[in-house]
Amino acid sequence: MIYDVFISYRRLGGFDTAGHIYDRLTNDGYSVSYDIDSLREGHFDTQLLVRIEQCVDFILIVDKNCFERTLDPTTKTEDDWLRQELAYALKLKKNIIPILLAGATFPENLPEDIYDVRYYNGPSHNNEYFDSFYGKLKSFLRALPRNSVSPLLNSQEISQKTLPNLKLKADVDCVFYLDGDKCLDLEAGSIKKLPLSKGEYELRFVSKENDKDVLEMEFAMPEVDKLLKVTLSEVVNNRLQKEEERRKAEEEKRQEEERRQKEKEGKFTVNGVEFKMVFVEGGTFTMGATSEQGDDAYEYEYPTHRVTLSDYYIGETEVTQALWEAVMGSNPSYFGGDNLPVERVSYNDVKTFITKLNRKTGKKFRLPTEAEWEYAARGGNKSKGYKYAGSNTIDDVAWYDDNSNFKTHPVKTKQPNELGIYDMSGNVWEWCSDNYGAYSSSSQTNPTGPSSGSSRVHRGGSWYSDARDCRVSYRYNSHPSNRFIYLGFRLALAR
Image (cartoon, rainbow, N blue to C red; front, side, top):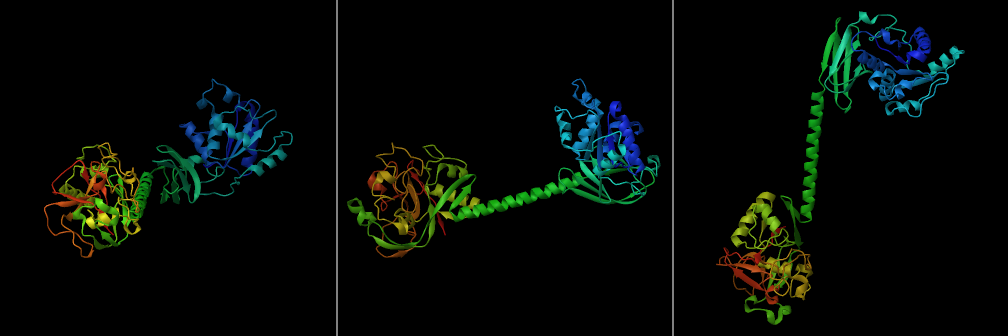
């Protein structure tokens, strides 16, 4: 039996009015739940709540003592059926129609679960002019009279006992629709009974948590009771799995786009450690002891010669200990600190590091050539002709023996040069890829140094060097296996 109207009242104070309303509504063809004594034996509370779920309209008869029991602190909520009925109807957003009898009002201190009933309106009750009152009451109803037999059947024509029950048990909280019409709210694990005539039906179950989780089926109701177990969890899990896969794909796409954007900006990340490469536009410059070097230049900085280079990238800073450890898993440095330049690394150690770095990034990092190093140190095509990398005043740009306190310092703590590159003078010497050899006066394009030799070039001076050794044209060299606490490197990358 499906009820269109539910009447809630207190036996003492509201019984007569509820009975009159029930008689008039049923005579007009409405299906009304009114007398709790008519409830079948068994789960009384479940049957009562099912009736509220089924109803369209919820009529509340309020007499002047209606809420005394509710407001009595000794009354347990589970013992106050009117409160439970009203709270459930409010929760389900039923069409609530309060009817206030003579002298009745809503108390200011109603409990939170039923407080909102104060905001609902109903017709003014007048027992002397009941017909007028009843006419107004019908204008508040949303349900329509039942004048014909439907698949759910009308209580006036067929007794509930003659119908088999469809017993529904869902594994998640959901809303049940029968032939497109909302019928019941189902709680996970509980069984709801629905009297239903034999026939073919379209059933639809919609998860309360997410209305995208829907299970639809065609169902043939037999002539006897039928238990239907509804498994929505698989639908939910499939949806969650697809959402997670979509989220992961979107996140991977976002990360890839972010990585590409960073790489355009010269930014790379390895195991959480970010480092930046600075773009150096190619050009032609004079390499060696140019005029600003004056008497500080050594003979092996001659002869000066013209060099043309293609575009490339070079490290914004010397390779830090954090980056070295992220790639190699260990730190060979004497001076400890994530943002300090790595030192005590041989040329051969650096080649191993670069091989591993390239495997992790998929790039082709390398050491700069000696020509690339000097061009970048001079400021590339933005060069202002400084003696040191970024200034003629060494203290502005370099940690060297007069200011270093004989130790390395965090990168990027001095001024950068014209290209925004730091510490190309001082802090630590920097390995280059070239074998060491004498200069030629001939013009060269993208030179890589002598084809053989017993030592490799390093440039820039260090915390241990005097100012003369920190000049942009000064050159030095060491055996590839040598490790010193003042010798590190920076990276290069072809465009």
